[in-house]
Image 1 (cartoon, rainbow, N blue to C red):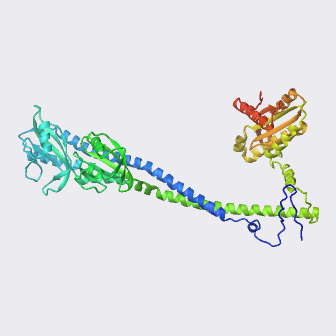
Image 2: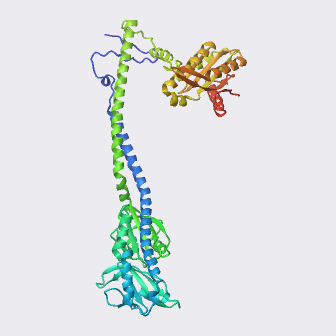
Length: 533
């Protein structure tokens, strides 16, 4: 039976790595991929939830923009239709024929009928001074009972009415625009009026609001519902409907006052359990108001297909990432297995299967790891540099000058963009080669600190003059062009320097050198600066 080696420092048994049977690599090390699948699933669900949460926030923002766009379109089109009627009637009222008592009323009506088709009105009528209306093909009728005609003849002001039942059947709904006929003496001799049919206003609301999944409601002078794409009952008070909703930041009474005062505004509410945004505005030259409402459900449904697509792509990406991680771990386990196998073979050759009790393999691995170097530039890695530099600084001759150089390449991105990453690699290699020369000459150590940053500790400088000579030489060598094939690759570096003083540690020197480098970067680059304590 093989002896089981023990760790002499902790007294814990070292795992025997010899395996008699062949298994999958994951099974050999007791690795389960179920946590990876579980965490990937949780991550995927979390990302999808964030996507839909963001969709909800976007929907709230879209509710406001859609409602405002719907209101602007509806209000503009209905105002335009009313203004067209007013402008047409006021233009016709300027013709002298309508003031000529010798011209029969029926002739005046015929002239109106000839113009009507060109302006899209179903009806243009003439009213005489006795408030008798004349229209082609119909018997004259009195409009003296109409409130709007009474106001027109008493005030001499044009009138725009709410919708009301008219026509022979008494059921046709329309809106009426009427302007007075005032002669040169200022007397009202009659009126002209046109009818805007109810269905026409409904069509405008449906086209303006429907394209944005909004609901539009036209409110009359007394707050009654004249038309609504939301299916609100005609003639009901809009305030009675709003009292069933939960309003935020206002009340139905306050809203009624704002509508009566013709103040535009908006509010949030809960209608039938759904968050809604409503904005409202007065129609020009009328006492009507338009309310446009967008619900959260309609806004969210518009972006739902896009959210679903993003969620599916996210889930697919998570699956791909999970497979990649699984494969990567499997490959790494192959490398670990090969390493362990090599250690087993080395153990056999050295100890012939009899490992001594006092062998510290961790120390061996640590000492071996400190020899790792950067594969591109040939200098040691950051962690190795910090370990070596700390030990070298501690044992340095205090009669000599110890200086830490923080070297940063100024134009690596420019080289990568113009010469490609191959050119950048060549430039980094050249910097590493130059620094290794000084490392050997002045008893130092150099390491790669980051992508284009290097650290170099020199402990064998005679005095400050030699330090300045080294820096001058480095600046000249770092401001050069490297020949690579048919290309000249420009190289430029900035250098920050800190000088050891009693009581300083390596961390302090690195910070001071970094501060000096920052000074160079802020003052033109391509030179050096020595930190002054």
